[in-house]
Image 1 (cartoon, helix red, strand yellow):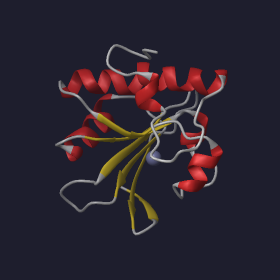
Image 2 (cartoon, rainbow, N blue to C red):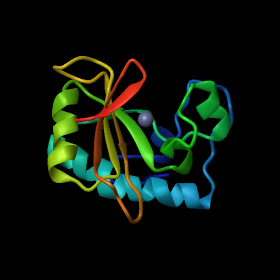
Image 3 (cartoon, protein in one colour):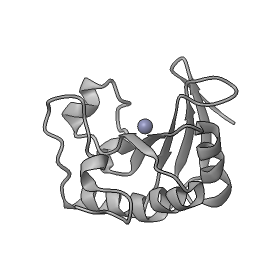
Image 4 (cartoon, protein in one colour):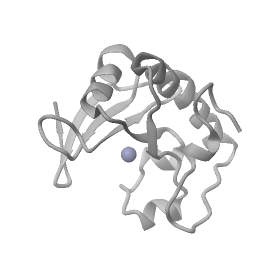
Length: 139
Ligand SMILES: [Zn+2]
């Protein structure tokens, strides 16, 4: 199923675990909103393919990968992204798009290892954080 021009449901439900990972209707709707409002516009700004490392996670998948409790991944609201230029990806989201949380995940001062971004149907907080060694700080 195509969620937007360049993003499929298969990409956004990928898991390296063997656990079931199928969103319900509300979670699917959230994934569509994420694709429409963040992923696709970001893809257009960047101009090249972006890898989705993790999108939707069922509760069992989230536990299995050590995700945060109450993770927005479990609601279909978040995706972890990477490409050849992760710092650019981060800044494109920060400067051009609406989002709930944007996190510079791991890596170093030059580039994050990956970019976490979430989107809600309403009440987006525009939190910009850095996660290093398991600690989150506003940046
Ligand atoms: Zn994430």
